[in-house]
Length: 105
Figure 1 (cartoon, one colour):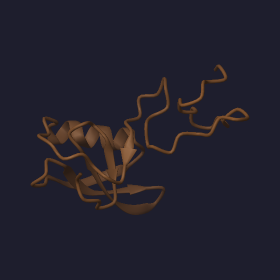
Figure 2 (cartoon, helix red, strand yellow):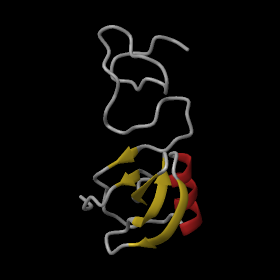
Figure 3 (cartoon, rainbow, N blue to C red):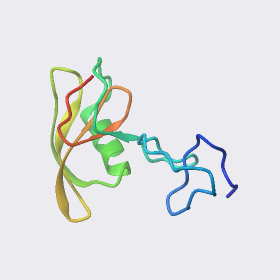
Figure 4 (tube, rainbow, N blue to C red):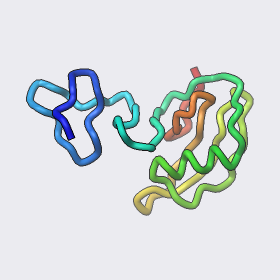
């Protein structure tokens, strides 16, 4: 794996090179299939099916995804487990995995 360039994500388990800070915007690392995560979902018409939402949330490292329902702002929301801890999760129309119960922007 190369050194990366400023403004790009560092891959999981890789330390950013000197002078390059790892991204904190929740974007997935290049070359990974993990969807980006956010605490502030984007509001909009969500075309993901419940199954697609579940799959993307699971790809972000969550298990036992339950109770998914689309809210009035177009965000799929439910509960899941991650690292043995319960969590509120969701998926916005842009495909970002939502952590917590943040209000859509």
